[in-house]
Length: 184
Image (cartoon, rainbow, N blue to C red; front, top):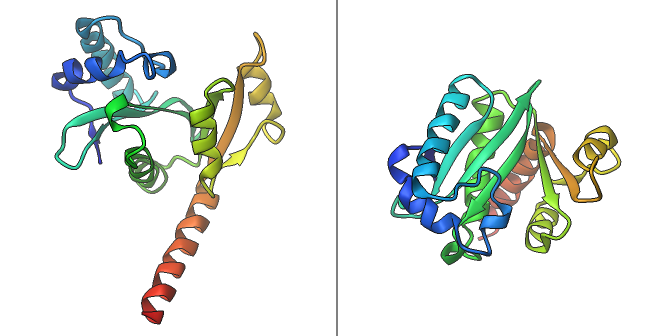
């Protein structure tokens, strides 16, 4: 569901990124396929420097359908940024990509906290975040970060995913699976 980014995917990703339901919510915007190639090169270099982590989201056949990123990494924490092409909305790819990415971040790359800043106008993403049992609204608990995000106006809600809460979720989910298997 996710793999390391490649320059060769830029044209396909650009076509998916430019849909009007997607483009406003993409953090690393590009206005041409050539610009996306340049941005992808910069992204790969920034990842080598440890500034971000970026993966391509793929469908079940390995076709690129979006990206998932952890930006602004500092002290074991960073900000999640995800987009998926419009034809793939509502098909479960977002959740699968996040689960694979969180596994890598928390258990292979020593990330402790993932933040999500979601525009208050982006109702679709707000509802998706609120559905996840390991996501906590951090507007009050991380007020200093929330205030920094909204220094120019009331634009974002802040959500937090801690490694501990995610691990607890996985353990409970695994225990439920075992219990269901034993009952069958």
